[in-house]
Each structure stands twice: as structure tokens, then as C-alpha cells.
Image (tube, rainbow, N blue to C red; front, side):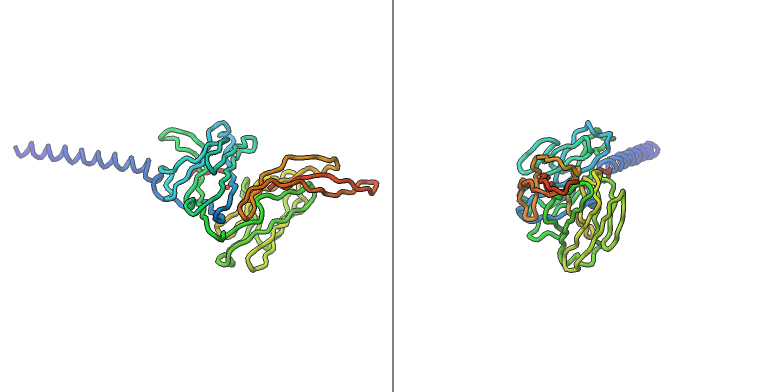
Length: 294
């Protein structure tokens, strides 16, 4: 009788150990996804404003579905899909650019309740094949911590462009940088760096803003950049056109201003000199965060 009781107790202990193992295994699969994760990108936008965010991904995911999701508590397993690529739902639009391996998310009329965690996601599928994703945290406030006058700038090959980045007083002593999303190359304030015949200079006034000057532009300089102050960033798209003397009419790009209004920019005339010292008017446009697995 005593022996049977010991055997029963051993079987119960073994069963409990197996149960503990199963629970631990399930936690390994789902636990890290459910807990709060620090966002790799921090952005702020003015109440009522709009924002355009680039999301880069590996070329091997060109044919995969992409989507944009949100959870105020920063838990990916509970995030709500706001829109898939190439569709608009409510105040969110997602456009995929497979030839450049990124998609853009446009959000309009942002309010305080839109503050929270967001994810750029490439859908993979399967328990053992989690989706590729990158987390961002967006804060909607009356005065953004970091902002730019316009989310788009344009220039021509061989020319110059400048971007003014603003920051709140609490970021006065934080590191200021100008970075490119594609390769994460950054230029620090008061430094000059030259790459492929292009020069980048950053100068600050110490009173809430710094200016980025890019000279000797090349066509390959086109792309998405961001003003970085501490861990905060403000996206900016740079478009570099060919330095042609032929009159060209280009489509009007969508621009999000610092006030948050979306508008179409109008082409502006630029004057170039020909070899005969005559002047002709040409037209050019003003155009305006690679996914990593957490």
C-alpha cells in the first residue's frame, strides 16, 4: 500500500514537471512578443497634423504582404492592423515601393489618442516564422519635440539643398544628426563629411534649431533622411532631379507641412545659363523609418 502511494506520488510529480515544461515552452514562444518592447524609432507630431513614415525591408520580401499596425500599450500580439500596402483606410494610407524596397505610411489628422506603438510589418506567417517587423513610438502633442518645416525637399544634380530642423528646449544638449534611412549613415552637427562628391554640413544656433546643407548633389542622394535629436527623429524625403536645360513638367508631389496640412506643391521656375549666355526657364518640382526582426 505504501509502495503504491509512492508510485502515485512519483507519477504526479513527473506530470507536474511536464506541465511546467510545456508552460515554459509556450512562454518562450509568446512571452517575448506580448511584453512591452522599446521602440527603435521615436517620432512626435503636432496635434491635428499629418506624418509620412518610410519603412524599409529586405529585397527578398518584395512579393510579401506589408501592413501597418497599432497598439497603445506597445504589445505587438495585440496590435490592430490599420492598413495593408496599397490601400487607404480612414486616415491611414500605405503605399509599397517594391523597386526601392520600402513602403510609406501616411497618417492624417492625428490626435492624442493616436499616441502609442506602431509597427512596420512584412507578413511571413507561421508560429516558427514570425513576421518581420520594426517598432516605432509616436507621440502626438501640441508642440513636437523634433520637427521640420516640410517633409520634402528637392534639388537638381550638382546643386545644393538645405533643411532646417527644430527641437524643443529639453533637447538642447542632445546629439544632433542628419541620417539616411537606407544605410543608416549619419552626419553629426559641426562635422563635414564627403561621400561621392557630396558634402554635408550641419550647423546649429543653440536656440532650438540646426540647419543641414547638402552640396554637390548626385541623383543617388535621392531618398529618405531624418533629422535626429537624441532618440527623436523627423523624416524628410529628398528628390534630386537631372540637371537638364530642357523644359520638363513633373507631377506635383504630396507634401506634409510643419502645420500638418497635406498640400500639392506647385512647380517653380528656375533659371539656368546656356553657353550663349541666354537664359531659359525650366520647371522643377519641390518634393518632399530596413526592417529588423525584434
